[in-house]
Image (cartoon, rainbow, N blue to C red; front, side, top):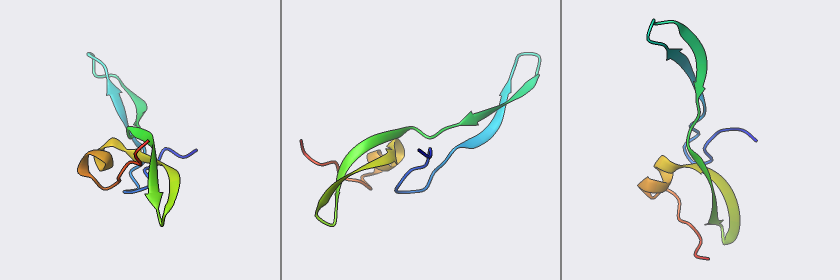
Length: 64
């Protein structure tokens, strides 16, 4: 399963962990994805959406 938002397409980025002595080691920054039940074209489906899209109201959750 890809670590990518179904709404905005945000995915993992790479960077460095920098220690106190400035030694750099590679790491990845992953988006905060949540599995959300939502309605698309009258059908309830499950999407993996980043929290930024949820907070912005780009996705409406299905009432339980």
